[in-house]
Length: 163
Length: 435
Image 1 (tube, chains in turn green, orange):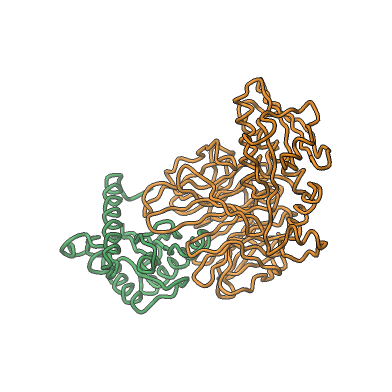
Image 2 (cartoon, rainbow over the protein chains, first blue to last red):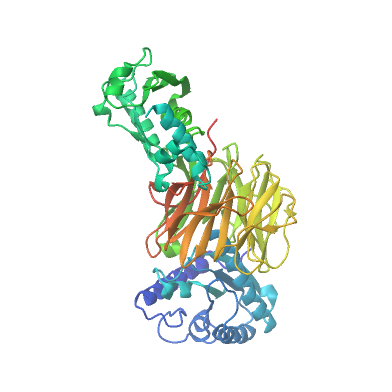
């Protein structure tokens, strides 16, 4: 039983591809910035997925082999929690990711731990746990593709997907 | 120097080389251990006699290639040999072979009918004696196997250990862009031939491992959205091992094939569980808030080595197969991951990260005798043992848009080779010798 129709699922997949390409291109240009997906000018309508992506920020980053929330991550999650508490119609998927500088199996566990830390924080800020599912990709789905720390630091992330 | 001396030296060098503790006689030290170097044994392998000469030449070349890749032998150029085609009926003209400075000689024949049959004799020309003489048969459908079986016989007769050529390697074949890479299961002969793909690639598929009888596989797949452990007959339909776990991964069979041990992530903690290979209720083997993963049974099934960050960074621990009593065994700088117990039980291979590098290493199960075999600034991980406990496979990924490739190295850190695959490849799992 899924609430997303096939058409919406396709559109969402397409949006994700655009996001991935945008961030990857960003990193290649050395203009890494926040790593927040940029779907074009404008912040999107209030309560839209685009607003969440552009104005709130859908991801937080971690230090190497760490799942501690940095002050920047906490600030982002506070904004996410406020938005999610305002727009309660969305379901929430937290994706945990690791960079490629670790072993495959450990990184699946590390991604799970990062996702869990984010879930716990959002729940502590009043987001209903029943809205949230988690998924760990380990190091299998990097967004920034290069072979140095500028990319690895963008890949150590937890992404909040509203759907 | 006679072949016998060299052969003994070869055996001794192999047995003593792992930790350089052996104190062989002075002569053998000169031959084998100087500077940790090792001189491969030259070996003559004329084309195999056959009513189809091209087939006999092809089989002999497979044997030469196998022995050469082992790093223990240097097959001589067949065009340089006194005899170009093997003769398994008559004794060789030892004087002629000695004059050609050939000490080790392989004479073979092969015929292809309903089955493929081969005879092989290994000769010591210095002692004018046969080292081994055997005949083999195999299925004509996979005729290359006869060459692998013969290669194993030659390797075993001259090096004092069992071979590893009649084996296959299960791995993850990777294709497509890095950010959205397709990863599917594949299996090939150890020399890269006879590739078969076992999954479609629709879902991410990782960490495949063969059952001890080589007939089944367990692996991690994202088919359900989250990673879960599956089991399948080779090329057959897959079945999720357990239900109800938020995420399960890192599976490995027990030595009797009846049990699969794996990790479950739940609420940010990752613990080790075991379940019957046919499914059923899992038993929890570790508990706590740490990440416990990459479990692997000892070959007698009594213990499990695994990786845990309970002490801070990932390190190796050994516990009883029923859980409990975990003892840390790794104490070097950095972190240790992906432990795998050798089939002989004497060594544990692992991935170590330290000093910004990835190392493939081995140590004894009590943690002593650590030896780093390969170090790289690139990611390399996931060692797997060849069935003779002398050779390891692993994978290395240069990062960026490039992709991983399979490599092998022996337990003395010699003879690192790239195992050629049709696509990027990772997560090798070496099969037992085929029955």
